[in-house]
Image (tube, rainbow, N blue to C red; front, side, top):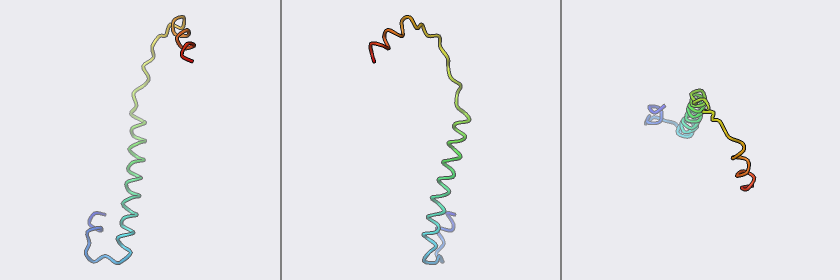
Length: 62
């Protein structure tokens, strides 16, 4: 697409179409990267919580 955008023999409508194609290509690339990022997420790190000390602090805060 970069070569198409740099083509000196483009019609009047070609720059607009090239821009649309580049924008949509970037959107697809972003979507694929987000899906790949979600699949690579680290599993949660569960921790033991002492509710006898946590609940009073929580209730004070809210």
